[in-house]
Image (cartoon, rainbow, N blue to C red; front, side):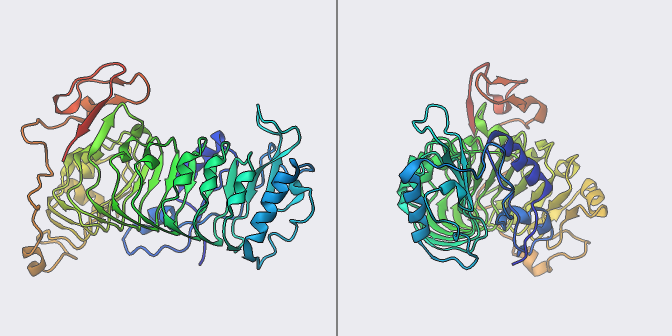
Length: 438
């Protein structure tokens, strides 16, 4: 497949992570396969494997040294677990000087470590097309800070011993053939901030702990995960979460914690799963969100007007669902929106504000049920539009409309709240309030 570079929002965000962790590589992507009108905007997020590795930082160099026989044994075990190395990526892995091995990066030992000499701090074998497995002996590389193994042919289970790597901050196993349940060993790595498992064959349910862990980036798309999305989703401190192209079912989680870590989230992708229910009003209170993609699911009901509170959003995609009613005018008045797609739903009306977006080629509403407009569904399809399934997706019964300014929140320890909380809630300094809405 051909490779493409990340969406600019993504590149900025990953560069920000690189300031805090070493050698975070940007991920490019194969040609997108999405059929959606604006797939070019967010496709690189979900269809990606990393580009060739960047040069190591000054702190991580391929120098003479190595921390004795344990690291040599671990790297030789990794080499022995590879059954096919068509590009000769491991041809230099000979002799005791492991810091001279191609793709192996050494540095001074971390503070407090028992080692006196240089230690193996990173492995970068991206795009090597290696066929084999990841052996348990990799945990003998006790000072690893990053493992980059994307775009290979590694199969089998992720070894449980990965949980022993106390200094590991980045783990990229994307675009391989790994299988089995979610690798729980990754949740026991205390320093991990970047987790990329996309484009593998992982299956089963997602553990709640993955969103409770202190991760900045969580890439889980293009696997075979199933079941409901854990309710801990919105408590994640991550800035990027991708769940696209799995087999997830049930509703989008509706519990949102005011004063919690979820205030950092900038991009979240749910597209191409089997999610049902309505679009939660709580999504309108994600203060930093820039990309939100709920397309190609089975969501129904009306679109909540709280989405108009997403003042920083640039890409909003709810195409290919079963949404009905009129599109809220305020949603079309989002100031920073560059792509708004509501295509292939059952909306029956749009406002003049939305017309203005359509004139700028920003708004795609094809395949709906808007009278007098072109490229809409045939009337028989509109007459058979799905109902709201007994759900009210407009407001909590008896509550007043939510004013965005009154829902201002500052997140973190000792959180403070600006103005009145929505839905008549109260709070103060250091108080966390959890709101559950339909």
